[in-house]
Image 1: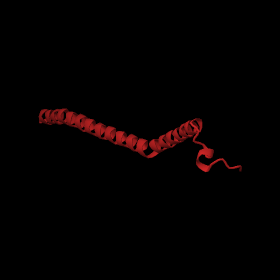
Image 2 (image 1 turned 180 degrees about the vertical axis):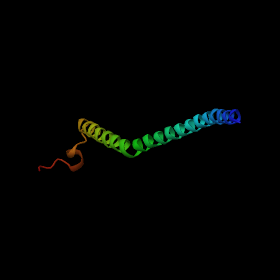
Image 3 (image 1 turned 120 degrees about the horizontal axis):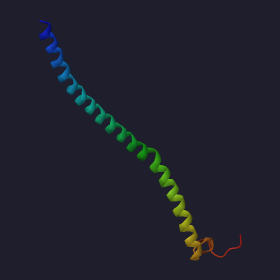
Image 4 (image 1 turned 135 degrees about the horizontal axis):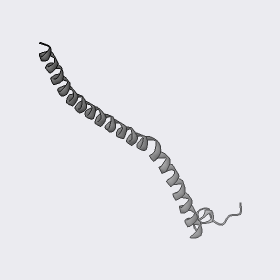
Length: 83
């Protein structure tokens, strides 16, 4: 009788180990997908608006400097008035 109990334990342990490793792999994959989703949200909600703000300011500075260099400053739009 003890042999049959021991054999049942070894059978259950060997099949349980493979099930546990498959389950662990599945959970690890789910955690990986969740962390990728969180990084994507971080980029789209936090970093992209700041990058857009910075690029917009750089572009407006460059565009204004170009307009002034071409002669399209205040005098072009407002005329030659003495302020």
